[in-house]
Image (cartoon, rainbow, N blue to C red; front, top):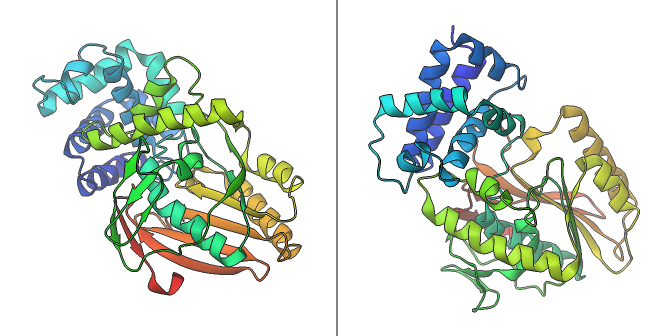
Length: 352
């Protein structure tokens, strides 16, 4: 019987192919073959999390290898895109084994942390979600993001959006997002973010040397357009953080939310936002956040409303949903079906 760890690697190979990343699929497949032959490594990786698929152990390993390539270390820099090496399947398997043998400390650090993908194109769904909140409440927003990584999506109102159905933002913005959009345009509400704060258990601090490369390592190496977007967003986010003093706090999501709820101000709609991070949290913390939101929602008024905006899969291997729950009332609405990286967004007409 295939172990949960090996089954998770097999599933990730399929997801990489489905996501248009054939090289990354081959690397994960090479790692799968290596783990089949390396009992000690198999046991060590299996012990990282009770659910290797939900915990994305394969993507942690993939990021560790990509990080070596981004740092210019041989042979990974030559084998990984945009390198020109001959990366046949045997060579890739050897590269995985060499990383474990000669860069074991680096690889274990990568494996210890859940993926910090911070895919900025998800902002093309999250921003319409905030427009929905602004339309429903008629108020400026106080924006909280949990599992924020480097906080790139926290600055989503600084980007330009161009789709077939709608456009938004400064035409001269350094980052332009152009997802495939299906359905009606989102609300044309006035969006004013008066306050923003974020947390992550292990935030990526862009002010620290080398952290930009660590963040980039979580992007699949054979998707250069995602790396280009990431680098543009990194510059904008770093500038925004310097100008505002906002920084991603190192804290658990429940601890952060509990504190932020005490700072609510009337005349603002408080929005809790997160994207593709819920599955990485312990069940107890998920329950704590849900309880905090339900309690705060029950005490909300039209002058001080609360919203919960989620870009998450409802279950493993199920396409992403953008959902929003708003109090008073607590109505939970499906706003869109989304590609995991925000490449395609199917806006639900009823939401507009």
